[in-house]
Image (tube, rainbow, N blue to C red; front, top):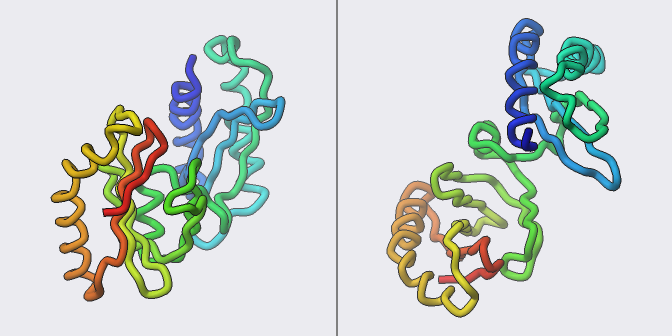
Amino acid sequence: MTAREVCQRVWDISAPCAAEMGIHLWDVTFEKEGGQYMLTITIDREGHTDIDDCEKLSRYVDPFLDEKEFASLPPYTLCVSSAGLTRRLRRPEHFASCMGQEVDLRFYRPITGRRTAVGILKDYDSETGSVTLEEDGTVTVVDFKTDRVQTAEVQQRAEVYRVQLDAYAGALSRILERPVTERILYFFACGEEISL
């Protein structure tokens, strides 16, 4: 079973109990941290989530994880925790729930020389993965691209997306009533960025 399949299956197992408890699942991850695998179920609730919520869901899920379908997994630790203030934004619904709030984005590779960006989340497009942040009154659009391009092809490919990014910037400028000061394309395949 792949990590993605494990997460989906654990999500499906956890969902009925979470709904009955009046909490919602924020995320499920299966990642190696240091030398140990962690199966983490992150929950959230209007108001606050407490340790009793985490314990109850953990006790519900634990017997299912002893089933044969999970037998091939490497040794891991089950952790059920609150999303808390430093919640990770990984799903479209995460971005939607944080719209208009200050967020701290962290990148695997530097974008415009930075690995982090802090600002007000103004827009997120789940189809393209583009994020719009307002930082110190300025608006930046970062459009993430999954095209398989080499470093030598970045400039040429960026020109293909120029019209699209100009349209995003124009629409946002009208909606937010302020200019978009920076437009960035980031290509995951080669880790290159380009400002347009």
